[in-house]
Amino acid sequence: MKNGTTKDGFPEAAMSSFFASRHMPCAECGASVAAEETHTCDPERVLEFRLFHLRDSMSAFDDDLRGYLESAEGRFEQWLAERDRPPP
Image 1 (tube, rainbow, N blue to C red):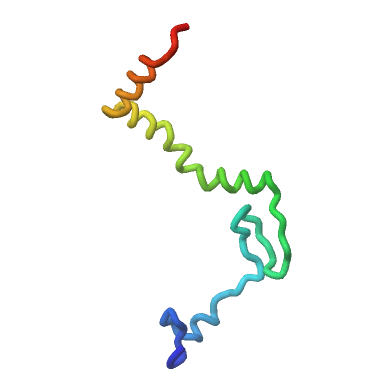
Image 2: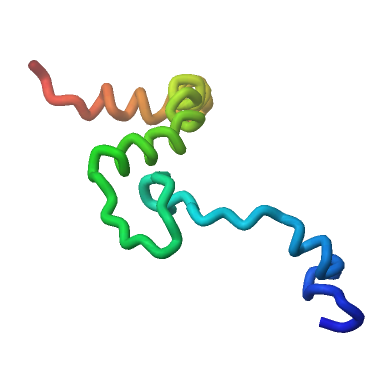
């Protein structure tokens, strides 16, 4: 841009000193892929990568459910489900 700076305002010399990796992670499976390489994701790796990203949500599920079931709305839903359950 102007006066030897990039659009982010950093000096061009500072930007050129960063290491430019030839490999980048695949957004779908996380595999390290060379920039010039074509890549097909392994379905098992995609699943593992997605589960890795969901680990915080999965670990909080029990606490979130317990909190909901203890709320007024949750207690009503439990009552309604019990009332609407067909007899055995």
